[in-house]
Image (cartoon, rainbow, N blue to C red; front, top):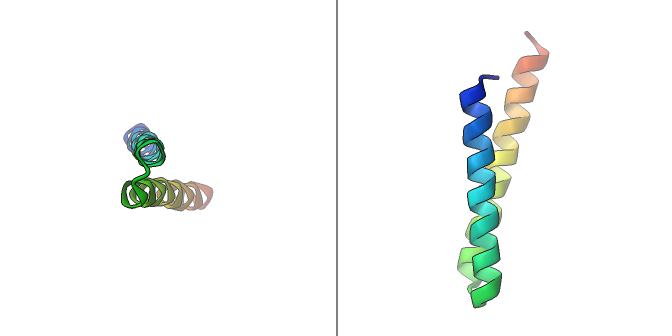
Amino acid sequence: MGLDDKIKNAAQDLTGKGKEGAGKATDNERLEAEGKGDQMEANLRQAGENVKDAFK
């Protein structure tokens, strides 16, 4: 996995956490769900990259 991918995944995870926190603070369920989705996508990408790295 390249450093670029790690940075992008971490940034997406942090963005998701921010959206989730903002959604909870403002009682906005849609924003909270969007944040959780962003975090899940970042985690899935990270897992995929880890699998690719394992086969190198």
